[in-house]
Image 1 (cartoon, rainbow, N blue to C red):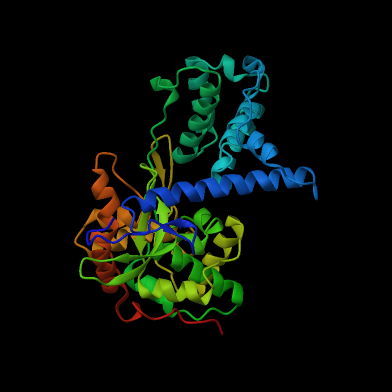
Image 2: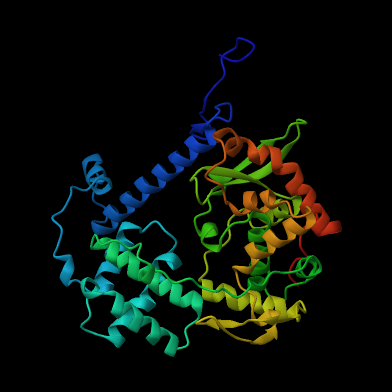
Length: 385
């Protein structure tokens, strides 16, 4: 029953989701989206295994809830075998997240072919660290290696909190665009369709705060929504999952982001990250983004300077860094705006704040984008030649 005594619908028949009249509709719809993805993936797995055979409810249930299997002798397994098992258990993570530990397994196989994770000790860890430093790997890469080692040891049931299993990386500063450089990308007229696609996708990532792998799984019919502000205005928004709490956050979209979405029917073609990074570098070069940037390498805490024009450094990741920096600059360092747009969350905030913060912060987010974009705030980026 609503405040005026009338029945309030809590289920939307048109979208097959909980209506926004429910106080926890974002969380519930996020869970429903996850379930739908899991069931769909299970169906496709079973169909691929036996095409044109009927997929029964019993088969789906067994695939979704497999019986506990007898554990193999993990002590004899290699680094790659343990990592592959970990990947299988976490197969719904982004493909690049699942692949990033392969370098560690390859390095281990070349360094000490017979070494098993069960034989990994503090002395071996120090020798391996020295080997990585001799190879002049960056601090960030070494940190990934030690994270992979801990994943393997977790599979063996070994504790992973010892100090010698941790590696504190000194990361080089990340490139981000200044406001005028962002506007230069918007004014740039792409010379080919694929460059127009990548420029628009990069800008959409920036304004929506989405990671490049998020766009691969983007379901605009489910994730597009509207936010009703305190003054009654309704603004377009996108749902995405906050990193720490797992709750769905609604990110308000500036008008230019809506125009980009409409231009591409809210669905960008899937592309390999390497391909995307090559294209955005070409876009940045043609747009005249030539500011010098120290793309430094930090290995063992030592810095090697590497000054290059920014069009050689820019990547798909740069979009989110740019969003965070520009939103803080345009809002007098209001970090809450960037955290909302990037999908970050504090574990100590109250449930009510987590639920309502998008509605409360949306006006400030849009005002910040208006400051950054100026006349381009509600225009579409220049189209291809």
